Image (cartoon, rainbow, N blue to C red; front, side):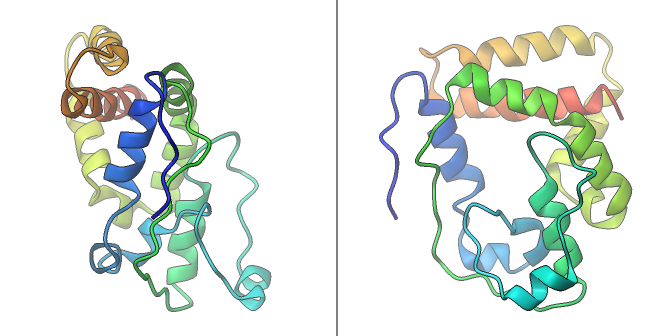
Length: 172
């Protein structure tokens, strides 16, 4: 597994990538469509001609999961242990901005795949956080903690996840 060399400003993205995208094949095989990331996929041309990416997804995020879920409904998906990390790591503010701007895509994904997505930890957290009073303040706190470089990485990663879930929950 080749990793990018993170800097202080990209360490959060490196850690997020390792924690969320470099999951063993045995885990990914339990929900094969949800673990399709277009940064690391080999697919037969026939599959692409049968199932194209949905142009309704705009900007960054979730188009590959939508495609993977649709593919999984018609074709087998085999996951192997060939995890890939990002070689072009985003700085903290860029990654957080991408998450903030991906809300509409996440909502589109939920609308298209309600059964599959309702079982995800992200959706469940977003749903719980959606009922929290002062959610806008929590979003700012989670964003700030995720960017605070002197905190332990586990706390920064948790804050990043909670930021994304709260941001999505604000629109559920």
